[in-house]
Length: 120
Image (cartoon, rainbow, N blue to C red; front, side, top):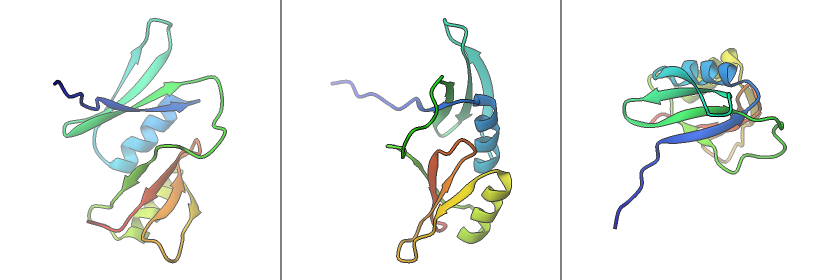
């Protein structure tokens, strides 16, 4: 039996360029590229050498609820609070900081939720 592999995590958005730039700075590595589909829509893709790409695809409708899938980040070289502050300076917003859980919930510039955990 053949297994499949994840090529990309697709993110529906209004402004692919804005989100690709935010996530490129948030993650701190990866190369962005733009490509156009057969309908003339421009996609931004953030490629990584060691995992799936993040693909930012334009859609006409806005975000209407909580994400069913989200990214969890662990800071490299910073503590969790310093990483949250850095991400907020890049354009993220803190949504929840539950006192009994190890994660802090943020949203990217288009409102997509993600979590910052302690360093690993």
